[in-house]
Amino acid sequence: MPGLETSLVARRCLTFATGLVECLCFAGAVFGWASLVFVLKQEGYFSSLCVNATGVNSTQVLDCSRQDEQFSLVFTIASFMNNFLTLPNGFLFDRFGTTAARLFGIFLYTTGTLMVAFSTPVLPSLLFPALSLLAVGGILFLMTNMQVGNLFGSRRSTIITLYNGAFDSSSALFLVIKLLYESGVSLRASFLFLSACSGVHLLRTFFLLPRNFIPYPLPDRYTYGLLLTPLWPLTSVRLTCSKSETVSSEVAANGNAQTAIEEAPLNKDVPVKQVKSFRECLLSRFFAWHLLWLSVMQLRHYLFIGTLNPMLQRLTAGESSLVSQYTNAFAITQLCGVLCAPWNGLIMDRHKGKPRPAGESEQEADLRASVLSLFLTALQCLLFSVCASTPYLPLQYLTFILQVLNRSFLYGGNAAFISVAFPSCHFGKLYGFILALSAVFSLLQYPCFALVKGPLNGDPLYVNVGLTLLTLLAFIHPLSIYLHCRRVSSQRAKSKAISASSQSL
Image (cartoon, rainbow, N blue to C red; front, side, top):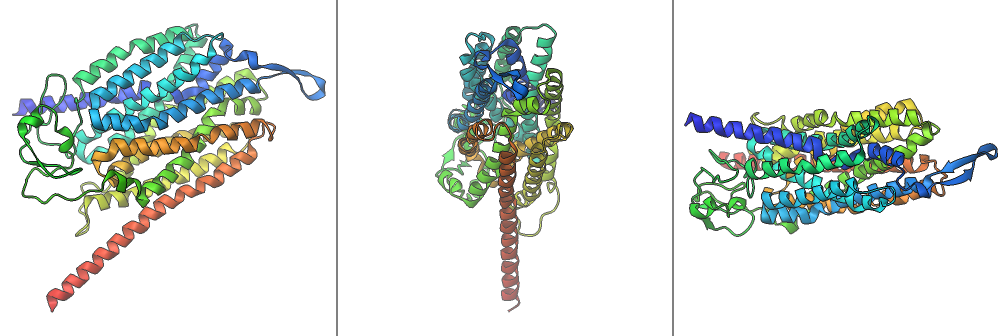
């Protein structure tokens, strides 16, 4: 049925394109915080915390360190909630499916935009819940869109990393709001428009995404969307993430068994491969080193974003035009995240379609391909941290480039690695759990900021050096995966040698 096949391809392409726009324009807006802070300062948010102080040569200067501290606290809480609440959101997604998770995310995101719209310099405390709701709603957009990679088989990791890159690039949304503000468009009008865009998110939810999940591997002629049921037969499907059982095609057609088909063989005579339980995944060495890999680099990025405005104020001696220029440059580079991220996916997918060594499973090949991705991400973070630690203003242009490149690799690589290293039925829970644990670690950014503002008298050099040394721990993860792959390959070679020897006898 060529007409049906054409319709399915068109629907999948439309789903991919609209999901990319959604992630690019909305999902990670909170990470463009530096641009929004510039606007909020112009509006006078937390300005009552600025006090007159005596500077050099007994001159009177305005000390706004407490104002900067409040803005840093808003971002710290929002970035923490962005990651920590991914854990319950992951359970929500795995348990109730795409539609329920997206409706919840749209509600949070819309509430957050309305709170910013109706906040005022007299009521700046609304920023605390507003930015947190924007962050949590945005990560739900990303989480529910990443499964679109399942529609594209051999390019699965590339699609996942591309969506994560779009998530990073969406931080430029606040730059657009800043430029509109400088052109005369009020902050309230911009955020009311974002609230109105929720109608588009609702249309995608019902017409271009499944009610439950997109399975992987993808069955033939699989379709989804409002009033559509799967067009593929589901007789005798075996569950892989719980006890084995038979699921009837009638139940599957009602949409209650879509979670059962992921990674499931369609022939009941094929033995079901035992997969790790959720608990076993959490206690595995892969999970522990991956958590460390993500946490140390994420802390470095969060502290950089949260303190960018004060850093620029210090390096430019408070010259507003220069601060605005560098803030714009930072936000513009964030747009490149969507261009950088797919390269990481291509690195992870480069072995697809190539013949594998005899006896090597696809998961082993995926793990082997991830070593280079994990190593390059850690190396990028080290270079970015060194540049960020250097108090030379023009060098910050290079810092911005390395930051967006590394951040695109970091979050895209995180999702892609979880998808290949662990059973797909645990993806939402593991993705949420690892982000939640890394969020607890990222809370160290606020003590670091307080340390710089207090005992270090505004000089972040020692904190930056310490964080640079901390990023060296990220190299343990790719080394661990490399040694694991080499050990498995060696064991397989020994088994083949023993088998050949026994046959010759």
